[in-house]
Length: 394
Image (cartoon, rainbow, N blue to C red; front, side, top):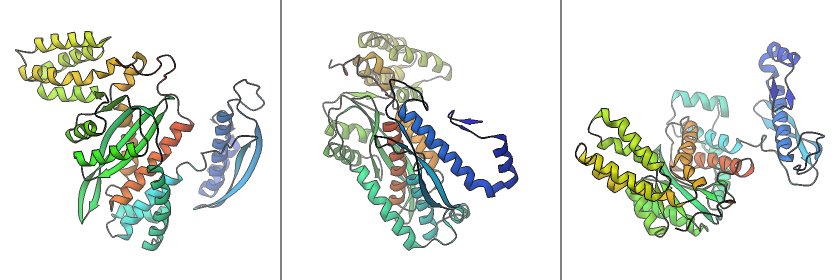
């Protein structure tokens, strides 16, 4: 079994793990983390050991020991070094912020007496049986300072702005409520994805979206050429107030879902879906408008409410056709943010019900920082502006 082509777990090592069981776990973790950091350095350098390659960024320069105290005891890791640049492997540090935030969310439940048996068991396993409100408060304060700084960091020019919201169960004033998590993700002029901001609100009312969007602008967000989002009354009103002159692309995936509510018979769903795909896949706006007119006429008598809805709403999903062809597929929908939201849910589901807004914001912020750093350091170019020269002004 190999790891990144760099690290081989021998039969002898596997046998030793089997024989010693959990006693060998610290050594196994040390070996795996060392292997991950070594593979990360190789990726950073752009060349294998002793390989002469034109794209090589730097030279390996041995290792430096670093001892960390863990729940398995003190472990000493070998940190890979490079000669000139400030490389530092993320494998050792990755996950620490989000894990601390998750532990804190669970610990807060425990301290406030709202934990379930499952949460109590997790607390005992991860944090130890003794968890005091003082320890929780001290840890939260230290972590919150870093998270707040990240949420208020300066922004710059962003070509495409994606907006979406999700809901988390949060205890507020003694009641369990669904709190709206407002999220903004962008694509910069280098073509990389960036997580721009997050806000926790009571709901998606216009005032909450407007305050959130204005905070992005106050942090330096500028140059937005297209906004991609679902159709929500509060978001639409806020968007018009803060970004009134910026074109808007309504998510085509949600449009297709919305259309199903106006289909009078189940047997028509496949046919309507095919007609919508034909419109969305049109080579240009003029052709799309022609297909739409034909589709509206087609259903005018057999599904009049559907025809009316199509004529009014589908044009909002065709704005993307004015932008570079190579960009259109990834600008049609909010799927990028939807995937990010699914990742957040996978982690927040452990907490189930947050004891308060701070713990909810803390955990999600920590998760978003990790993903943003991955996109910046290891992520691929999401959209290329080299050939197109940027979005069309038409």
